[in-house]
Image 1 (spheres, rainbow, N blue to C red):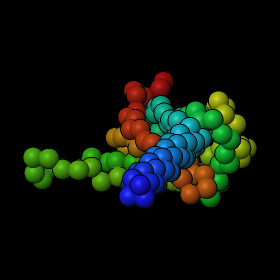
Image 2: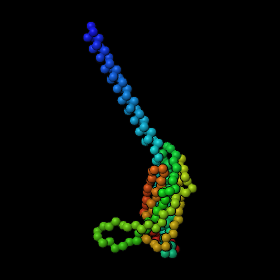
Image 3: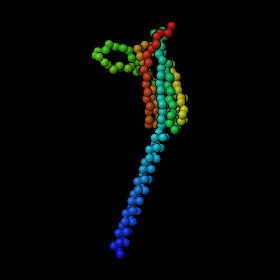
Image 4: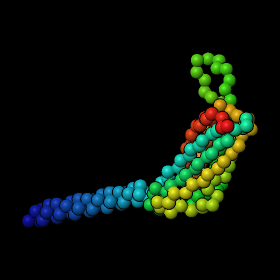
Length: 167
């Protein structure tokens, strides 16, 4: 009889170990899933956009720049002024030496943006409008927007070309 009891005890212990293992695996999977869901849901999500219009008047170019940033996430975050900026570049055409060449942009100016907005609540959109005059008229302008917040940055850019000269 003692042999049968020992086998039953071993089988019972094996069942307990399997039960504990199952519980540990389920709890670990739940914790990992919860952490992933939290990080996915509450990570900062921002929609940044930049646009511009250019017109020529009296041999100068004028750039009307519109910068927008929307907090599309579920948590608030702080905009850091250090690093948050609009950069303006110009391109003056040159003779192409081969079949295809990458355009070389010349940086004209770096401007602060969103200086009156240091905090973005969920669902909030803020914007800035900037008008810049450029004495030497280029063929096209590139405008970059960089938004910085606590170890994260968002970048976007657009290219605009002048419309016909205003009378």
